[in-house]
Length: 252
Ligand SMILES: [Zn+2]
Image (cartoon, rainbow, N blue to C red; front, side):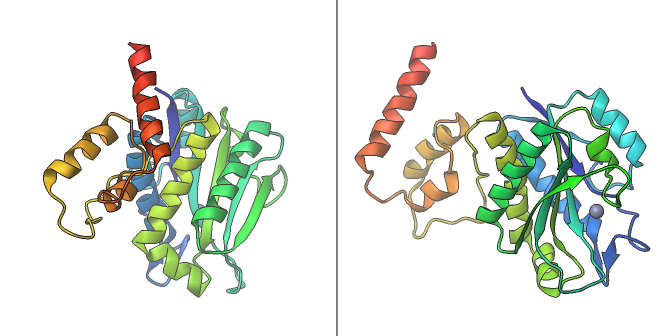
């Protein structure tokens, strides 16, 4: 299984005094997205290494980097929210180490996914470079392609509302995991959500085959199909399912 690193920015003890505003600690967002992304990455067949454990005090940067390099992860994604003294600054941006081509590739996939999934503004790709305020150790010293995502500004009132919302946190987790799936050319699978209820009462015998196919990887978008269970299947869908079954049978 492919081992990946999800790096939750900061720790539970970082705000106050730094990394936060009002009743909001940046870490609380990073930690929530990290937790969702880990779950989603595991559904997608990755082995996840959390360089900053969930709900814990900050692991110092040097320790993190040494541990990440020792665990031999194939890619890494660091999760953050941004701050600016000017409250009008808003949006998402993705940083990579300026000489790392694969890091740039990973960051550009993250940028494309964020454009498609997130409601806030695009700020695009950013190069982390030595001797600048944006010389990020986690990008410079990690041995694998690494991206640092700043998903929004907690110093901006609209972005702050998003950063606090569970819906936005889930979308950010999707950006993280879909980016890694896209990087490896793997189809992206969504999480089955207990809060997604069918539009009307659907008997269990109609839902169970979908659950089994999802569990075995023959169906990717569980929630979407759950909502469409009573709709007629187009021919392409019938052929796609038969084709997937056929491919599986050929493997055996
Ligand atoms: Zn941060």
